[in-house]
Length: 277
Image (tube, rainbow, N blue to C red; front, side, top):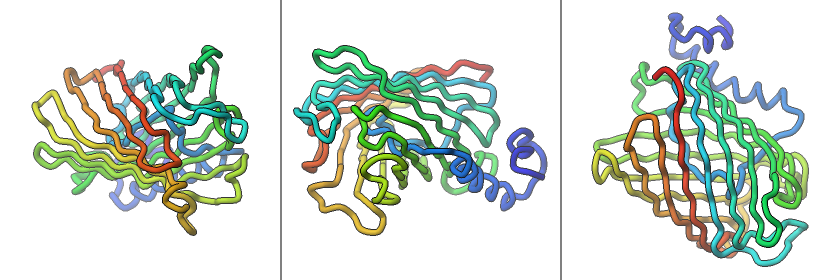
């Protein structure tokens, strides 16, 4: 049976190997159909992904709010300075089946002395192996394509593919996103695929409060990483509140540890899930 039939009717008895092949094949199909593509969205959506999807027929609405306390102070390569920028991203994700969801982003920016500006938009199809297969770890695969205006990103059309592996063990939780980025219009086109790993580890202090560390990196082309001073590497102590199954809340303070990274930012994610579950 075709992958589309599998996603539409996940209860159909398929072998695990066949369904995994479909899961791995779908993001590349989206990539092949795209005219242009999108890499990671910088400081507009700062999040380490878990493997779980939005439940079928539900819709998750999230607001990503990020403020750069200390960043670049001058125009670089035609891009506005990042210091004191406020980024607001609206993310709407709909679950189509236990295997498949799609997210849509609208990015906006508040620049000192210039007010609010539209930045761009991305779309993010994602597939996952359902929990009913009882794999030892959660597995998901996301691909994201889209556009950002050149005053905010020198690479206007970019693409990201993000494998996701996570595991809950007791009170501990860890997630690893070894992302690959590709610019299709802009100065970084010649750099090819670039490696941008993200990692999270957290501990449930109480059933409703978890604290931990998040790491975000942009290390450079897979054929040869950038010098350390030019890489982007950021560490965020963060807290997650699990007050209600329908609500999501995450707050963190990010510290850049290399010269190529904004030195200090604050981020918050607030989300609510609408639907049957």
